[in-house]
Amino acid sequence: MQLFDVYPLYDLEPVRGEGNYVYDSQGQSYLDLYGGHAVISIGHSHPHYVASITKQLEKLGFYSNSVQNPLQQELADKLGALSGCDNYQLFLCNSGAEANENALKMASFHNGRTKVIAFKKAFHGRTSVAVNATDNDKIKAPINRTYTTEFHEWNNLGSVSESLAKGDVCAVIIEGIQGIGGIHVPEPDFLEAVAEMCKKQDTVLILDEIQSGYGRSGKFFAFQYTNVEPDLITMAKGMGNGFPIGGLLIHPRFKASYGLLGTTFGGNHLACAAGIAVLDVIKEEGLVDNAAQVGEHLLQQLAEVEGVVEVRGKGLMIGVELPFAVGPLRKQLLFENHIFTGSSSDPNVLRLLPALSLKKEEADQFVEVLKSQLVVSH
Image 1: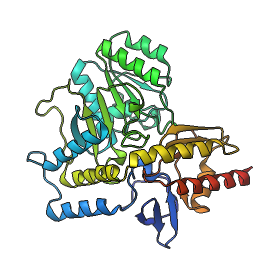
Image 2: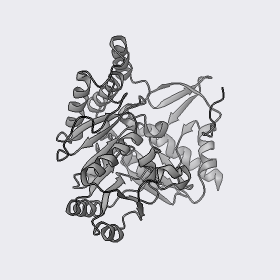
Image 3: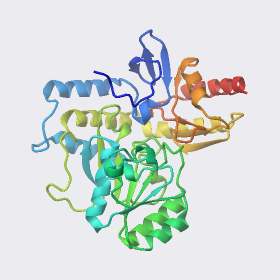
Image 4: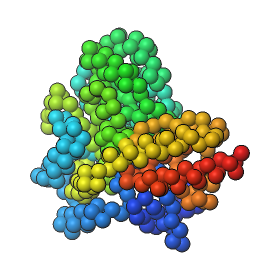
């Protein structure tokens, strides 16, 4: 049987990982500044993470959500304490797309509406409802276009305000920091004004923190740089450090009822063990603060590199805009310098999403390599 060929692949096979490095079959190390799409939050093969999953697997790997699973409550308690969102309710699922799917569903249950406001260059997932709020027509099948979506310009308060004033918008969904679109940070005044308008119109505000959450921005959630209190917060990516897990934080004004949401695999024993281990390490090793400090250092260093057009982001969610398409540069960084980096929908933006444990020396190593590559390129 052949694999369905939908991924362009680099000719490289990592076989193990440790900390901020992965290694190929020849033993060559690669500095990982991408973390497999922002998934690796605490570093590869962290001993506590490995031990926690192993211990749980030796006891019980899975049972359904029809029985007691105290690991779910432990995860909720630790997440609430570390995130500062302890008053929210937690629904566990398997991925970011599923988290956004359930968030949009919850919004429509709440106010009975179907129109959604999203933003140009947005990416919210590939499932049926979430993909319609994603600004990429190439990945939408006709069956996905089941409701009206308006895509507004980033930080354009006037157009969003005009649309919300009509009173027919179900939800506004916005990334805490826009990721695939090229690392764009919402202006605090913009986000706060949108949140206030949503309250007046009973429109649900969904903060997609799938990529920007879990400490990546230098705060637990990127929206915490503002005074916004979202109705719904979606999470995944770094939540499980590679184990599939997603979640939806639901404001206490939303009431649960049996059968309202559901999932077979969401919140299973192994997923919870992985999620708890991630929170343990983030807390014990001070990784949110590390992301803030090393991220600020890296942002400053990159801004001084000759040839860089602009550097954007918060913490360890960074976009480096260059005056040319970065595809060839990424290959050079990977195969010549042995550094993983990421791309975005903007061909000129290099995306950096390392583990929250990145060290300053590793950040400096990348900056020096980037300088040398830009000199060679020009």
